[in-house]
Length: 102
Image (cartoon, rainbow, N blue to C red; front, side, top):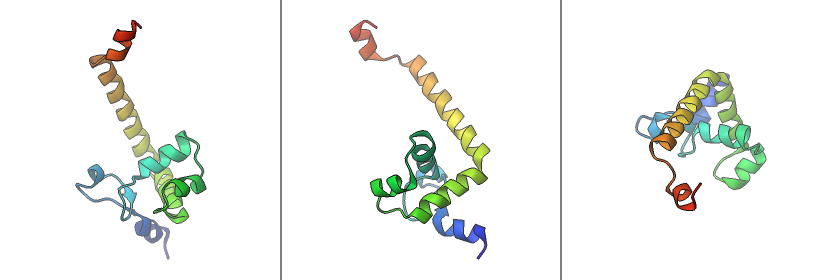
């Protein structure tokens, strides 16, 4: 069985579902979610499946493989999202900080 076939069993993209992003087949958990949990929050694959028991280790590893095969696409997406958050922070300052005098 080719690697592409294995990934296709675990990863799918459907227009209109989670914005058409790559996700674990049959769920709304995106590859990006898995990447953030693993790469940015230092969760192990075992910790991820403990938190989300509908996932299998194969799902998590397939998501990570998909990420590493398409890393530039994801890194660009992360950068766009970060820029959007920064723009929103500038456009809509925290009212709590105003109230606290900070």
